[in-house]
Length: 169
Image (tube, rainbow, N blue to C red):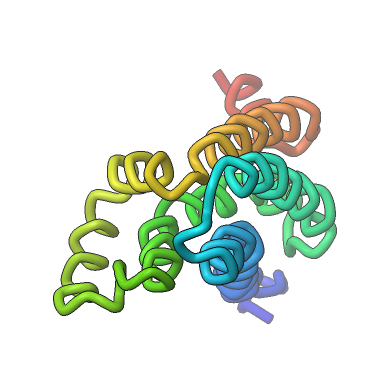
């Protein structure tokens, strides 16, 4: 308890958001990594279609099932933003793991250096690599769905920051 009698939700929020980022990253990118490792050089159009359907479906499933675990209403509304961060910032790492299956990515001599550089320019590198990786359609659909989810949750939540901000002005 804090000195004013309120629970310390700050620490819980940091822990919760970190867990959401990790779970989202693993769940969203796992199909891409698994398919690349399973198919290797045989990766083709069928796998791209599979990823284009599976990745957004996973994002939707997570955004609908995880909000009840959030420590505050605002955190639950913002859950899709944490998920988006995981998808886009963690994209280079996941795609490096995928590329390693065929001798690229982290299997290359300068793989770790390339991972750091790609992560630093993550919006651009994630988009470009996802086109090459075959996960661009899934990533873009999931991004659109998660952005719309944030908007809907913020507009429909009576305790949302958007409504509170508009009432105060």
